Image 1 (tube, rainbow, N blue to C red):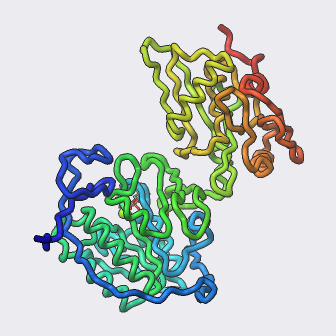
Image 2: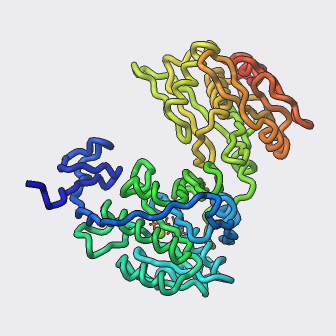
Image 3: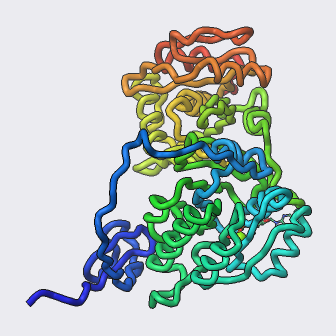
Length: 449
Ligand SMILES: Nc1ncnc2c1ncn2[C@@H]1O[C@H](COP(=O)(O)OP(=O)(O)OP(=O)(O)O)[C@@H](O)[C@H]1O
Ligand SMILES: [Mg+2]
């Protein structure tokens, strides 16, 4: 006899893994107690639909909606695309609500902007709005029921809507609690439909898990057009916003904000802020890193400390641990910097996370400087990828990097051989890591002893 009942599914609230049975530990992400039962979806039968040749498809590039926050526009790829669905993720207290309320305030000047708040009361939002200023025209809907939210949006058809947050929405049709995989997936799916059909550019605020992924199912990231990650430490005033997925623009675009009493203020020249070292300081180097289309100067600090541990520590903040381990290994093997008996700590200024190999050389120089007790030469930046053989590979877009260095008044850059000088910027070409270390370290100013 054929089964008529749809099998119950269990899904992980962290990674979205789904299976036909329950596990105490998620087989995919290894978290405990995250699998929850999901209500089975109704199977709907549908007939065929005519296909269309691309040439017959009518499409015009819709004009983007400027958000009034220049740095946010840049990360979105030049403003908000009408009828798109954007997910903004970030740790609690990082400033998601603040940023989006500022954006809504600017948008509401000549468009309809709605804030759906499930997390804070209307009064709380009003207090924040008063602090930020200019948000009088923002319309507010305090609701958590998905049906209510969707129906309101379909009727009101605002140009832009912010849902703060997607985890608070729930549909009473599903049995599970708000924030569970099923609920979040349902909410995002329904809002996607409303966004596309009613032309509402929708921004979803999402919470993140402890390792930085947007909480709830991974599916959310597949559904939306654009995923923005808001990073940075809530104890420091600088925040970094980056796109990890963007269907309408480049990813890895990055914007820096400063948290002030009147909201988040964009920092148009982050290199100015993060790219300076103190002259003569040991263990600091300036790297020129490409973030999307934007070159960025970053101070990289390293500490090399003797250790008795059998497995010395390699700790990187803002640096990929595998990359750091590789750089340490290449330094030991090809530049004769013995680090086997030392802990190595690396830190990137401003809470920025680097994932571009062009930063390798600056990381290596900071470590060499710390290990040798000699500072990096003043007013010199470095960029270039380090290969496993100790040879340097050219970094992409060297002209743009050199221009950024020149803008900040640096005099020279250490770069892989073959990088042409540009304008007044002098390039100290190096073929190997040890040549680069020789060119970059000011041995005459080494610490005595
Ligand atoms: N009066 C104030 N002056 C300066 N900064 C403030 C003030 N009130 C709040 N902040 C800043 O705003 C931050 C909170 O921002 P916000 O509520 O937008 O974060 P969030 O990402 O929405 O957090 P959650 O996930 O909890 O909703 C605080 O960490 C604090 O730095
Ligand atoms: Mg909030």
